[in-house]
Length: 81
Image 1 (tube, rainbow, N blue to C red):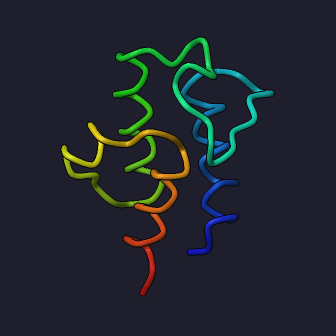
Image 2 (image 1 turned 90 degrees about the vertical axis):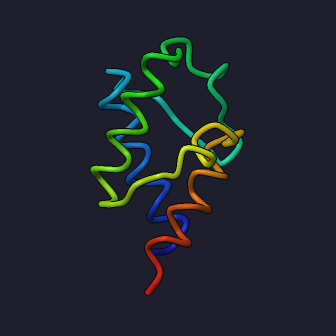
């Protein structure tokens, strides 16, 4: 899956999880950029992303992800065939 397509799908997931219809994410987006993104919502977000892309993140990946771009990279790697 191409990174731009992943970003589009991730935007939909972020809007649903955070209940923000106008949220815009970029590869540089971090938790501090979205007021609603706290530790509890992070768990919900990871779960929703895993369901959407039919994959599981490793615990190390979740704990070391610095921004949306790193999430996109992991998803792109896992979804390429």
